[in-house]
Image (cartoon, rainbow, N blue to C red):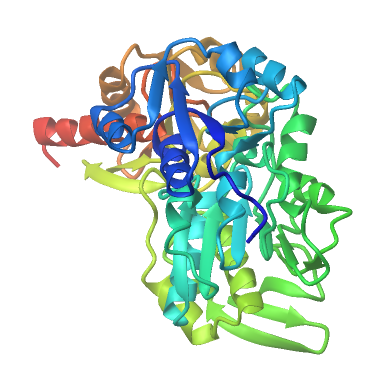
Length: 456
């Protein structure tokens, strides 16, 4: 907690009015700031009512460069790039610019555990919070997932552990953000529609380690060379996890058991058979959560109870329905190429994949070895359909669909009993849907509608 950070009577502009920005505005008002919220789009009636009740000025439309230049502080929602010309101009004029995560972290009282990575952040964050709760700790979970950190500040105490999922967009606007434990679950190209290169994206992720000190901890996927490279040079102590790599210290798998390895001992934490999550990548997330649990003093029995009761999150290899022996599985959170690869590899064969959306970087050619022999057909939707067909169309049947309804129906036509229709887009959703959750719900709705129509 930064006791010197004071916004009383300060003119603060928050850019972005919804979940994160709205929470930041409410927190700033509670701390005495004079707040203006800017957004380029109309905001929800509920959010507008809450801001009006707090006497927050709301400006809809292009960002007012003069107002930004005259602010004492600018706070950005994660969806707003710090490279926006009006924001960059204000910063050049000397106005401090920070993100919502940075703002909130200056006022929370309890320790922060920050979880980042390209895929698996939400699963790791949620399971870790459950482990800590099972051990009797006072825990809040949120950040990029669920409740923004700004909405947790007022209830924060020195004993509250804040488990926070953090994205590259949030991390790129951090300055003093200082997690007690920082976790990097994996790292592969993503969000290249906003970051100019993979190197810039990786550098944003690496900021999670930037303010850590020798008494802190860094937990990194030792199977992932890019993640290991991003963590190099950090000051914190290391305690890693791996499905395959050999380590003298960390969490790994031995003889069907998830174990804690120390230089002088090996301790069994739980059995792999206790894990109810499908896919090696989700098992890796369990190891990440267990590694943090070891650092935080979570007893093995509490880990076992948390894992045994933990099922998949919505939109993450989520079973939907089975029709005529064909399973429908929703992995709408697979919003990049690497995530799509991991989702597809969770099944041995008989996959009909629904892919596509708005391209956000990466190489669909990297899926060639994955689809060969495992995927029978790919139904493509959205703007990236032609890119996907060009990359893998010589290996597997690729057909376009102009709606989720048609994609689901055609995938069902092509699937065989014992197979799976898998939504693994490998792209963002914004060409056809408001977000990945809306896309996943559309897939589930269409699958259930199909089940009602043809019978199970």
